[in-house]
Structure formats: structure tokens, C-alpha cells
Image (tube, rainbow, N blue to C red):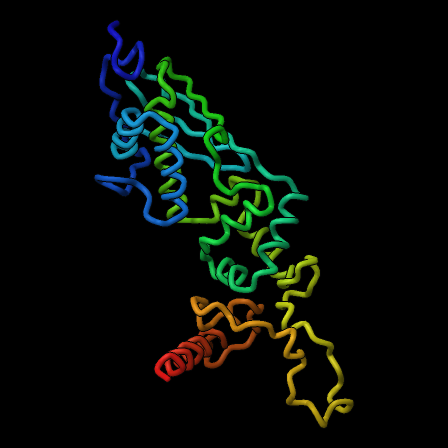
Length: 282
């Protein structure tokens, strides 16, 4: 059987399948959010452009039959030109409990980043926090261990490339998959951030450090009840001007209070945004 550009056994078109995972992107590059583009940029830097292009075609044709992500490992099956689908695996270093405890403390110590993560957002600065901890968020040139059961000699083969592109699209939909691949599931991370409370030592009761003040009975402080419980020194500089107007609502645990069956936070958010808009106008 004659050899093709991808390897010794590339002579036939892939077998078309029903129910495969199709990339949402129909043409051009894949990856819309900054974190998925960061992942794709790394791939395009270290991988063969031709095989990545054919991998994109495989991803758009729906040749990937399944994609399973767990700590440190992505497994997939890809239908090629042979009857039996190929087995694909992509491994990355998953960080352990001690390493994630350090990362969680570092993330929790930054109120804006913590609030954005609790709101389901992925702040670009998170990559710097990982780097400062000596634990990269994204794999480097040698950070991926990839295998495919196909006989193609090229690396990565088009089957691997298809999986990598679909992985980037999965990151688009859920940025917390990037962190889950490194060993920390979304719910576990958010729960840890709530309990970290924004303190550098990782201790707290679910409140930012700024609001973690002594609870003094009203009778003992009737004269200064309306004064701030935090000194001006603890207040520090103003919040990041790019931070959301409802940062405080995001940072605190939501109270179990509803008004006419509407959660209290849903009623407060428009007011916070209106106040922020008036301040900008002034």
C-alpha cells in the first residue's frame, strides 16, 4: 500500500461516522477565548502545520467518537480509514493536593481574581499566578505526552491533532476544564476558594480578608457601630478599575434570602451596576 504524506498507510479516506464530535468552527482557526487560543498557539508552535491542518478537517468532519478528560489525561477514539477506531491519549502533569493548596491560597489572596473565578470567569492574570508558583497552567514545548494507536509515523498525527482541536473547543465552553486537567475539578476549586476567604495563609470562613473583622456585640460598641471595622491601612488601594461592579456580591456567599421568590443577589446586582454607571458619569 503506497505511503501518503501523513505516514506509511495513508491511502484511503477516513470512514465516515454518525454521531461523532464535530467542531463548531467551520473554517479558519479554532478557539475563541483567550485560554483556548493560548493552548492552540502552543500546539501550532511545536506541531507540524500540515498535520494540524488535516487534524482540523478530521475534527470538523466528526471523526472523533468520544472525548474523556480527567486529571492529567485525555482519552479519545478517532475513526480513520481502518474499520477499528484509533485510541488516542494526551497526558499532562496533574498537580497534587499540596500544590493545589498553594495555588488556591495564591488565587484566594487576590480578591478580583477570586471573585471572577467564583463567577465562572477565567481572568488572564491566572496564568501569571501559576507561573509565580512554579506550576505552569499550560504545557510547554515538552509538556504533552501524546500517543495514538495508528501506524502513521508523523507526530502528532492527524488523529491526535483532531483531538487537540476539539479539546480547545471544550476549553472554550468550560474554562475550568483547563484546571481539571491539571488536577482540580471546578466544584472542588470553587469550594476551596470560598473557604480560603482571600487570606494569604489559606485560613478564613468564606469571607474576604477585608471583611473578616471581630464580631463585637452591639451593646459594647453602640457609640461607634456605624464606623468601619477595618482600619484605613487595611483598606489598601482602590479596587482594580477593570473589576466588575458587583465584585462584593460575587466574593461573598449568597444569603438564603428571597423577595417574591427572587434571590436577593439578583435584586441587588442591577443596583450595584447602576451605582457604578453613575460614578463613571461623574
